[in-house]
Image 1 (tube, each protein chain N blue to C red):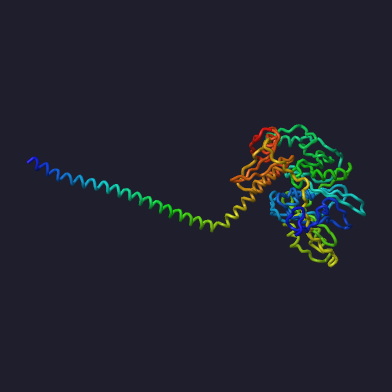
Image 2: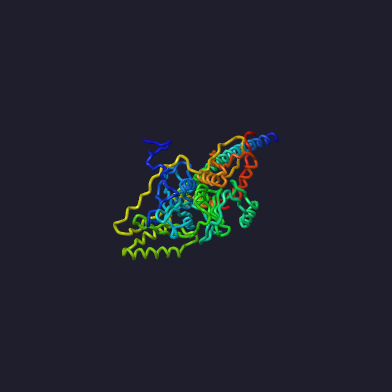
Length: 93
Length: 408
């Protein structure tokens, strides 16, 4: 009777154990896939952000090209004026 | 294609020796002397160097060429040499100095054949203006000693520069080699050790000339010569039947009184001629203030000669007084004056350092990223430290000493 009980128990435990092993492996696989997808998503997001930033910058650049040129000219003039002022000061006794 | 001494364009201009800079005979009834000229700039030119070579001040060449970079002008650019001058409204005897135009006139010859010599000058700074009025030359001296005025000593002391009580003749002496002492005590007409300051409001009230010009003036001027100092930014004068107007930027804000004086004269001329003056042109000349005599009116209709066009001048092989750069040496000391990303900024700083008085040699070295302004070579650490000190005091540049690469 004991033998019968042991055999029946083994018949029940073994499949359960086998079923458990299959679930862990699948979980790891899923997790790995999720990571890959997440990385891909992150990359896509970054690409999208970069594209938007680039578009924004291009838009801004186009809008401000004239302003920027004027600003560069102003800065160059200021630099020249500052240098000239320093020179004129240095020419005093 | 004809090329002259390595120049890339065909020679078309007048030889520069033909250009009169200082000495002019004055035709009866004429108030305008000289002739405008045009020169094509070459690589490495600066406006102060061109100005000195042609007997002009930095103020005159800058005003005549608005928008041209004083220190790093473009090679190939054609600039105006304002070598035509309207004589000021003052008695034509002795020395007349017009502060507004920063120009000195020395009248010689007799009434029948008057001759005038004219030189650019540096005059008093805004806070120490040269006083106007009449005086005379009371004393002359060659190789004068400079007794340092208390105000200048104090200004230098505040910057950490202790000046001696007096400076003997030599490169450090700001009076240069010749001095004319005026009746107004403490005021002199003298040379300079800072030639690039001619045409600037940079003195303590004295009037300084280029070394080569003070030498000529000193020789031409006896003791007791009368001196008149005036301030006339707006000038009118005749030449060959044409009325010219020359306007300069007033030294201290709008010179309303002077403008009214000139306008009254113009109205009087208009009334006498019974013709209308081109007042729009007058206002244009006045607003532009380029320091060039501009024809504005024909005195007798149909009788005036046409105003002379500016003449093209050949670029000289060497510019008189241009600071020379000694060759780099591995056994010398140097001072790094600046590291800059922009080439023109670096060239400008180097040019300004080169035009200090006495000269501090400086050049631009190209690097992977940017440009380095380096002063030197200096023979020893003492010379290098002196240069670094002057860079700090005069230009507020924090120089870094560089030891020799090779020990000499």
